[in-house]
Length: 595
Ligand SMILES: Nc1ncnc2c1ncn2[C@@H]1O[C@H](COP(=O)(O)OP(=O)(O)O)[C@@H](O)[C@H]1O
Ligand SMILES: [Mg+2]
Image (cartoon, rainbow, N blue to C red):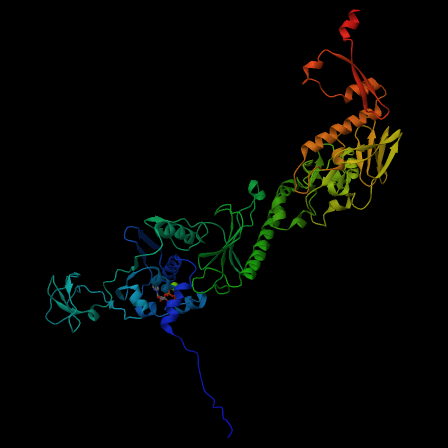
């Protein structure tokens, strides 16, 4: 017998109760409900939202003057919205927001167009029927034959089994249907009892949510600040991604003070901000995304979908707007004023706008303050130079050098640039900038070194640096047709491992051209540096002094710490290697002079 496999059918089904219970864990924050409440009031067309929180009773009340909830079933139907077609098309409401209210408290009370609801949230979440009490008060005019007066009082009894109310003030009988909604005051009130978040959470969360919100948010009687709102008085530009406000930068100081920090809002609520240091709510560019194009994550819209991609798009639009604004500004500023905004141009990646400006902004060029030394790659020697004009450069009044870090290249080109009082190209310009046609580029061609009147060489053996030293009259550094003769400053010639010591320099500074004295842990070893410097100084004296007694005097330390030798006279004998052979006390100087 052959086995026959029968085809069966199955289909997607939902365990409603479980799903709803589990959605409790879908929101990121306990305060999600606050954003949802603001959202609903705005969608209802309210002119403002009022929120009160009473910590003693843990009651949160949200009131708005919007269209009101006519049919409570829309409120209690998940994944369905009762908003008008336009709102649904523009905002894609999820129909889930109210659920966060149910999860956030123990008791729910709503008063709106359709009547009143009051019920423990646990029962609502258990799918128990929700009783809607219609608005009842005595109709102001009679509804039944024979009744002559109506007083509008809410002091009514009922309804009885037939749904009939009895006004205790004037005694007329009426039904809820007969009075319609006439007694609803036009305010929708949502009251959450046993609200979970505490007062400070509510306050801080609301103040954040209100910042970009289109309608006033009044918390415990105070209107919250709305610095990012479209009606905040800031100028917003319509762009393809939505509305963009660029933090003001115009002529004057603000031109140099642009920011790239970004605050993105969606449907009036904050959804993204650039990471890092936040300089305050007004030091920011604001974007209200077009909510037909951009969407946020279910259920609480706390994060953009495809965030990285959206942020990239936003940044590129904001940049385009910034550059357009900068270009317009350029027309109104003098070259020097425009160059003032160098940091702003750098920030918006539009340095090319400087290519036809006949001045080089401050800070692009630097000058060498003092004798170049290795600095562990943090050139404190480079001091920003002031404004340099194109004319200065073209006439050769100012020469600009392209130099690599002295810790990498060694001191030779730096010595040349320093002695020639060149400016160093230190901060970036666009590669099409006119300056590059005039740069003296030490990175491509080496500076030639030539010693003049070399007397002799000796080996210096320091702690961190050692090598031959060449003693000479002077040395010449040559680059192209240009040269400089140096007599007063020693130089470490890295390529040769050679200290060049001209006769005018008796210091030991040159050891700092051979080492930065920073160790592999980035610590500066000052005492080693001091010792090497001192040793080199002694080494130079010993190698250059023509008078041995004077050489010896320079080499001796101070004896201030040893009173025993004060006023004494000694005869010192050294051997052929410079080692001390003997020290013998001699007759004091005064005695000899007296004799
Ligand atoms: N403050 C309000 N004013 C008028 N209608 C409201 C209000 N809050 C909620 N509603 C109604 O309840 C429905 C469900 O609300 P909600 O769960 O927040 O979902 P959504 O806002 O995504 O539609 C809304 O679509 C709307 O019809
Ligand atoms: Mg909603």
